[in-house]
Image (cartoon, rainbow, N blue to C red; front, side, top):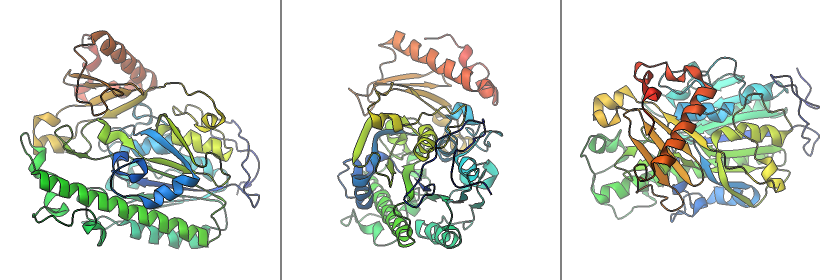
Length: 447
C-alpha cells in the first residue's frame, strides 16, 4: 500500500505537495452530488423558500461559488466532467449509452494511488458501473430497486455501513442523491412543506415523465405547475437534511477536522421557463446553474464567496490543489485555490453539450430532434443547434435568456461559433463523427 504521507506521483509522473491534517494524515474527502438540483431553488442562493438550512450553515464555514455551471444538462456527461476534470468534448461519456474514455485518470484513481479507501454510492441508472465512472473505486455500490429509486437515507445507510470498516485510514466517499429527480417523491413531511393549500390532483407520480407538457402545445395549469415546484423544493430540503445527518455521523466518528467536503449537483430542472420541463434537452440557465460549496477543515476560503464562473470540470483540479496532490496532465478544468490568494480569474468560457435522446423524439415529437452545443462566459451564452438555429444571450442584461440576439449581433455569433468549433476540434477530433447527423454539422456556412 502506498504511504499516506509525502508527495504523490500522479499518472503523468508529476508530483504535488502533501497536505497534512491535524493528525498528520492526508484529509478524507466527501463528495456529494444532488441530482437535478438547480442553484435557483436553494435558499443558500437567495431562493424565497428555506430549502437548504443545513447548506447555509455549512456555507458559513466554507467556500461558496456563486456561478457554478454544469457541463451538460443530464447525469452521465456532467458526472464524467466532475470525476475527470474534463468537459464533454474531452471525456467521451457525452452520448446516451456512451462510456468514459479509457486512460483518463479519475479523482478516485488519483487518491487511491495515495492509499485512500474509495467508495461510491449512487442512485441513477446512468451512473451504473457499465458507463465507466466506477474507475478507481474499491467499492462502487450501484445496486438499487428495479422500479424504485434509492432514497438519500438509503444511500447514507449503505455509506455508513462501509465507513464503519474504513474510516481508520484516509477515505474518499462519493454520495449521489436522486430524490429531487422526477417523479419528485420526497418522504413525509417534506412532500407537504411548501404547498399546503393545493387541492388539485397533480402528484409527482401522475406527472411522471411529463407526458402532459413535453409534447408541443402541452401545458399545466399554474396551480399544478406551482405544486410540482413545491414537491421538487421539498425533495431538495429532504436532501439537505440528509447531508447534515451524514456529516454529523462523520463528526461522531472523529472526522470533523480532517475531512474536505464538496456539495454540488449535475444539472438543474426546468419548470416551463422556456417552454420545457424536466432536463436532458436544453442548455438554458435553469438547467445548468448548480450549487457548489467546499468546506476545508483548515479554514481556507471559510465564509467566502467566489463570484466568477466555474464549472464541474474545475472541481477535480481544485481538490487536487487543496489536498496537495498533482493535477493530472491534460485536465481541462482549473484549480480555484489561487483565487483565494487574490489571483485575478481569467474569463475562461465553459463548454457545454447535450445530444438528442431518441426516446424523447419518439414520445414527444420533432422539437427534441436536435443536438446542442454551447459556449458560456460570464457575460454571454451562445447556443448552436444541429438544426442550424443559433441563440445568443447577454446574461448580465438578460439573465432569464428571453431576448435572442443572434440575428442582431451576427459578428458576435460568428466569433462564438468559431470558438466553439475550435474547442471541439482541439479536445476531441472524433466528436464530429460518432453519429451520422454530426457529419456535416460544422461544414455549414458560418454565420
